[in-house]
Image (cartoon, rainbow, N blue to C red; front, side, top):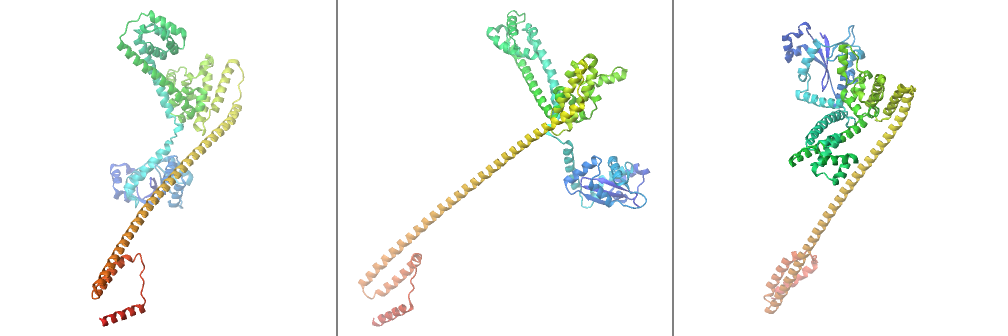
Length: 567
């Protein structure tokens, strides 16, 4: 008797197993757990009722995504409706591994669902012996299916978009903070090191980057002259400061320094200057990246503060999920828990304190404006996270609202209603989005045209190459044919010369015979005949054979007979 059915989701397809007998109380005993490992014993408990293989890798991915999200796929619904026993007073009992999909199946199909306990142990055995329970499925094929589906599932879950990657923002802001600390430490080291030689420069120049540039430029203070004044003005951007540095160098109390020490100081100063330049480039990169990923948040609160919020939350999606109260104290967790522990006042702001709005607000309004700003930051982050076309329209409007609220706290001027502002923002955003889409379509069309031209150029080039090759082949063939004709004509000429020479020889012999007498005529004629027969096959190509008529041949024979009788 079948007690329950168990659903098993594999990369190859869905499988439904009928459980014949099971003891729930003794299921966790070591002996019973060991029996699950044995295929023979496990087969006596579980039997394959039905198997539904996935048609393609895409179908497998769709089904596994649906299961992970707790949604009943159409394939799974059809499979269960077809193979689960229906009718009877009791509902069919189905065991599943995941409670989320179990709840969805119960709601969709009205089944009695069981999870955990016996079902977990049976599924453990099914997972172990699946390739032997399903006919035609090998262990290698099952592992390949799992590997392929695992890769495609992970790829789909990551959903990596190069243009909207907030990981780059997190890394950039972390590196920016680290560079600030390092540049500050290195600048203090340069100040201390070069201060032995030129201590007055520290008081004249307060900026770290400028001090490092000057230390590299001046070198030995005793070599500083009026000619160096222009170069000093370029670095300090102040004529008075440049003159003060020149005068201080003439009456400095610093110690003398060796050339090798100066070389080291200059080398270290140049490194600090290059780090400062790289920090500026990194800040520009962060600004452009925030404009791509979170333009509204950047427009509202600034690129650096917005990037810090994203970094602290872990991602833009996580920040969008936070309520405004969490965003308000994000970065002040220690102060919050300390206040909760000591029952003191909780912090009013965290990372958003670095925004210009809170600094501009009066002391009594700092808490109020931070709460309002956190609310707007949450809205901006959600728009950035879920909008298809990134625009900074909403961020600019939200910034205007914060400005109005700040002026309301100071002057009492009533700000605009949020509904009116958002209507304006939606209208503007739709226009901007349409413009961006139009530009993107234009770019796409240009790209397609360029690609089409490139392909046409390639095809024409290939056609020209083929034509050139054909011409070469034809010219080679014509040359060969010409050579062949020349050879044939040469052979024919040689044959004609041979035939003419042989004719001359025959005539000479005939003349000799005529002079020698009639007795030698017959053998001469025979020789002549033989030579003519020998020459004829060669001359056949040139002259067609003249066939003699039968009457002429008979007359010749009669003449020959008469001559023989006379002799």
